[in-house]
Image 1: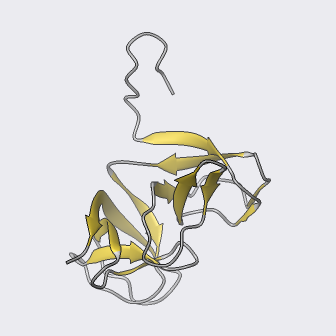
Image 2: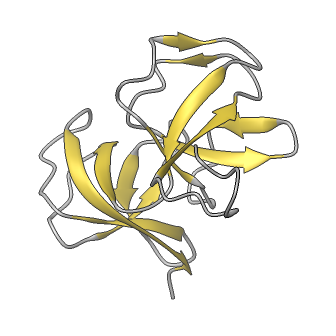
Length: 129
C-alpha cells in the first residue's frame, strides 16, 4: 500500500489485521470492526472480499489481504445468475441479495453451486430495497 506522500491508495486491495483466526479466508467477504477483519453476519455490510492468494489459515492479528474495489473473485454460497446483486451469507460467501440485505457486488458470471469461484464487480451499494 503506497500512501507516504499523497495519502491516496491507488490499489484496489488493502491488508488488514484479522479480528480472530480465519480458516480458509480465500474468496470470502470480510467486514471491518474496531477489532479487525472478520466474517460478516448474513446480509450485513462487508468491506470487501479476501483475496484467493491468502494462506489457508490467518491467525488472530495476522495480516489478511482484502479487495475493496474493482472486479474480483468471490466464492458462491449457492446458485445465482450473472447480473444478480449479491450479499453475503454467514460464511462470507456470495448469495443473491434479498430485500434488506447489504448489496456488496454484482455477479459477472453465473454460479451453479455453492463453492463456485465467480467473477464479481464490487459495488457496496447499501441495503437492497
